[in-house]
Image (cartoon, helix red, strand yellow):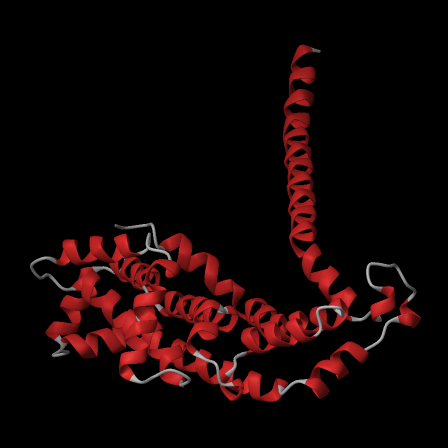
Length: 288
């Protein structure tokens, strides 16, 4: 009887462990779903408020009372198309330039051996601790001296170099085996060819993440565009919608519609490219 009981207990033990793991997984997913809903609640509120009439703001109404009048108001009372175009031009310029410059800088810091390399890297990391507000006035004065006020150059060129993106690419390239470079050198490949044919393809996740981060920061940027531009024809979305808010501060539903128009491209971009972000940031700490 003792042997039978032992076998029964042994058979029940895996089932019990499996049930415990399943329950733990259910709890974990329930927590993640709840956390996701909490984080998405502001977006849902903005979307709902943008579909209300001004008289119904902060009220619960049936779906039949929802309206697109706020979006129609924004489109008819503001050059939203021009703002979108300006934002797209600036964002595309920053993303393209930042990917080229920061990727090359990260490759040089990770794969080249030169005197003072660690000092340069530490200086780049130190710059991460300097907030934009600390150097905004010197940047503005430099832009004035160059004659770039109210131009795309003022919104693009100062942001092609980003210390965080250089750090991410340096860490990403540092994880590549050095034997790959040695094999490429044996085949007659120079340093730049090795970078293009080995470094870039193997770090495409980091490059995609870099593009997403640069695009998000630029698309949502407000402090620099509002400082460097006063011409309404050069307003980006954040600056233009802020001016619209000042004109319609008594119409919060119109302001919410503007926020939705600003947010939609960013949300879509994250939904499409989110699989690149976590692996790249996680791998950035593998090798220092």
